[in-house]
Length: 289
Image 1 (tube, rainbow, N blue to C red):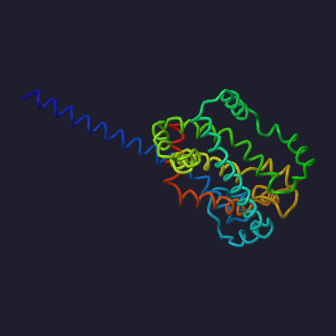
Image 2 (cartoon, one colour):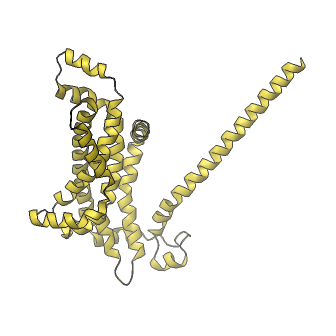
Image 3 (tube, rainbow, N blue to C red):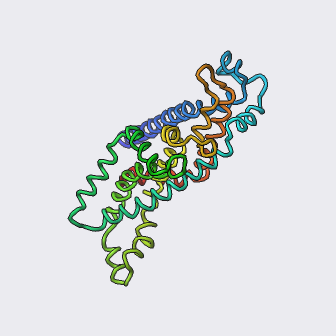
């Protein structure tokens, strides 16, 4: 009787301890979420202030909500044109990266040939090269071939520097797929192109989602390449449009915050719409990659 009572007491204490542990974890996660989201909240609130309020009361709510800051920021920075340019560059770069990366990863993951280690080493070398150290030679090269001030001046470098990561992540994912599936398809008369498009490509969607997420954030927010390769106002991307509010002597913070709020909205909307696919893709990429 005493033994059964002690077992019940220990079980109750264990359940209480587990409950307190879960509660503490939830509190810590909630605090972390608030700390993470506060800068975004501060950005949107600051977009409604005047410059005087931004400096004198940086952490308080605005006394009068300045809605015209957004209209003024949109007009001054030509945000509509910048959003279109960023969308075109980002979409084209993502399509090229995913298609070429998936094809190269399929060959490296499913076939054995003599030069395979050499190609793997070259792609690994591509991951080790500092991206911004190539700005000067790329500028000289693009000037000679006439690609400056074109969408290609951004699409090609974005794709080239994202490909090594895409190839390694997708190749690692495809390597884990049993080869019996591919052999069965070959027996049924399906060619390699059919195997790639009908089987390997759909199976590698979680890994491709990971690359798409990382690539979208990198392409959408890039400033250095756009600053060096684009000078025409009609081709400027969002990061370049944000720089018009800062001069060598002052910065118009109210318009800067309003423009940044507009620029960050597409990223938030994409995340809210595809958050389930994003989480699956990041988890699959972390496990397989």
